[in-house]
Amino acid sequence: MKYKLLVLDIDGTLLNSKKQISARTKIALLKAQQLGVHIVLASGRPTYGVLPVAKELEMDKYGGFILSYNGCQIFNAQTGELLFEKRIDPRMFPFLERLAEKRNFPIFTYHQNRIITSSPRNRRVLAEAKLNGMEITGVDRFAEAIDFSPCKCMFVSEDAQALDELRQYLKKHLAGTMDIFPSEEYFLEIVPQSIDKANTLSILADILKVEMSEIIAIGDGVCDVTMIQMAGFGVAMENARTSVRRCADHVTASNDNDGVASVVENRILATVRPADIPLAELNARAKDALMGHLGIQYTYASESRVEATMPVDCRTRQPFGILHGGATLALAETVAGLGSMILCLPDEVVVGMQVSGNHISSAHEGDTVRAVATIIHKGRTSHVWDVSVFTSTDKLISSVRVLNSILKKHAGT
Image: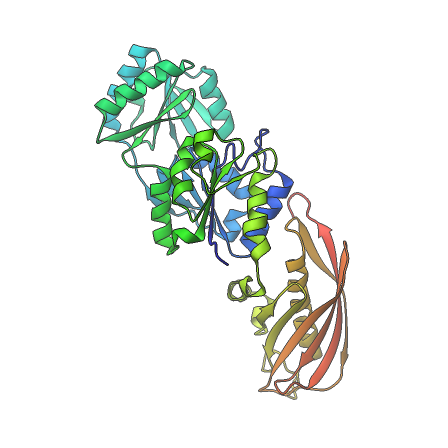
């Protein structure tokens, strides 16, 4: 598979106008992860505010990453490890507080699950706290309350011109120490020098040994331009401003019309070959499960056929050295189960309903048997597989029929 990382901005890109991930987009992203593509959520949100989105996409299961604060942190969603961070020296905050007071601008920063601000009733601050599921801590002396090193600081104003004037002033006075840019018409961000999504994405790519040509990046905002330009395939949303769209290799549909799903379906899912299914990873995950204890290893998988091997040894033989019929049925269910999972949508679950086997011959200890599963019925709610089990010399020893039921996942499934 050409692409290994799928980098997504959140607001205006992954989420629609209702701040939700559409069903089509979620299905596409779960399927991409099942095929071995890692998702990176690259957002201006704090890490705390990105975690619920990562959980909804099951990134803790598939090994995704969070690139938060517009690049100030890289967080491993599966292990909880902080891979990179860059912070602001808290000694800068008395200067920033005086400037905010002089210009009558609300100011705030983030700390763990809290927003700290001297303007706790400001509507933009309230909205930011709600968006990220954070509490607001109101303080009288903002700089004195900052006894830690924040990742970024925000000025707030409804006057876009006044905010731009502040930006120009700060760029002049903080040159070489911090970077300043507008993230929204009403927000001006202060971050450590040389921090943006592209620079931090390049750090993650180095850690993962991934080439830029193996990355898709999708976004809609000015803060996304650098990563869109740097990625092997850079995509702008239709709802992005003109200047952002002009920087992209491709413009997809808007965030309210499944633009992310369209890219994933056409650039990732449509190009999948049987060799792309990560069999080594599946075998490794199953080492402590039944198939691992029986020594079963997947060797081939596609939408119509799945193969696996199993040794005839102390784990799978009868006392007299002949392959146990129950182990043969377990092997058949294992290959048919994977076949159905490949065919299913990510919001569906496979349940084995019936297995029926005819044992024709025997295999002896020291041999390795091979199961070949072929689908003979693919229905909306059920799959039927024929599984033939052979010895290492291709002698047929068992013919098994497996019926799998396909159910929709419910909350908590």
